Length: 315
Image (cartoon, rainbow, N blue to C red):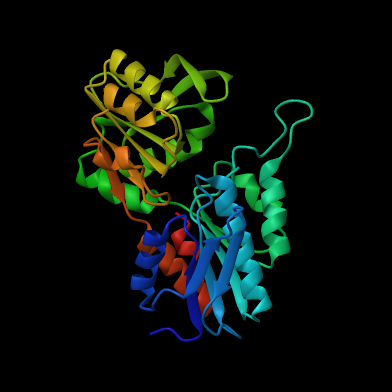
């Protein structure tokens, strides 16, 4: 049993927080997160946290703005209650895709959210599979960037996606480093899809770089949002001669008609983490499989609390 440690959560993903608590063998901290009639978020910490190392588990997923405010207000409440330290555990970092100016007169919202978290009083941030790694540099406090890769590798090997008859596919140029890491550890080939994006959430496959003919393909991505890129990539890989195609994604955003696109695509299965709670239609889909990252995040919390190195979790 750990001492002087408490884990709290907002309303975004209480199930994941409970899994982390089971791993570290402590009960979930008691806090009331409610709303006034006009929608204002109200947080009341209902236990003594003076001098306690506090971890706040809150993915900033849909509804994004509400989740961000819950996180900020809970951090503020803990700071004003004299918590020993406050670690924001953000399995899915919302606004991560707004990490740079892509057009004139546009914001860099990732930096804004980073500033808000720091200003609220967080001492450290833990997140997983950031859309852009440079977001770590937006924070002036320690940032631990974990990867769901160990969880996915174990599942992919169990399902036979390894060896020379398999190929790991990156759905775009930005995901090549991630796909290369998977292919190296699986002993599989590597292919890259040349994609053009005409508008947000709209993409078109242009070319496939690499050999997928006669192989089992697995597409690896960090965020599955509208699933348009994923569905187009799956069609392109099958058209190029792959015998089967599956996918894995760290964050199952699944906005709009994402689940319908997955169901209509040639994808055999889509493996996702529980960094974001699934929508009801996604839970009912026979193609979507969920792997828990509770143990991974729980181990990180343990090591941070004890002052141990967590570099071995960064594979």
